[in-house]
Amino acid sequence: MSAASVTRLRVVRTGDPASPTFVPVRRRPAASTLDVPDWRLSAACLDGDLNLFFPVSTVGAAVQQQVAAAKLVCDSCPVQSQCLEWSLAVGPEFGIFGGCTEHERRVLRNERGNGPRWSTAAGPHRSETAVHEALEPF
Figure (tube, rainbow, N blue to C red):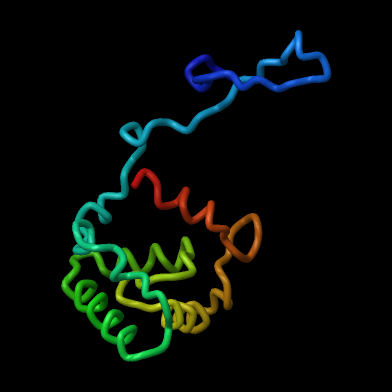
């Protein structure tokens, strides 16, 4: 382990409080040192209210209006196809990505033969943590 990858030490308490054990903690590099996918910087939704893309419910007239408004933003987005491909690959379960709702993305995955769930090396479904890590550095 290089000195650059260790940014702090974590104290692990053992039975004897007089002799704690210090364990090095690896940290991910700062966001400024990571390659940022440039397509997200060009997204039409970047400066908008992101709540628009995450309806609270899936039924009702108000939800349909919210979905339609979100899809209008997506229709004008220059990176809509990249966003949709990312959402199909990474697998955020909820929200409107690339102009598609959860149900529409599920249908697309099934049509493409990717299966009903997201596929990763670890298993068939991505956890909320995995999706959050894929979204970083944002």
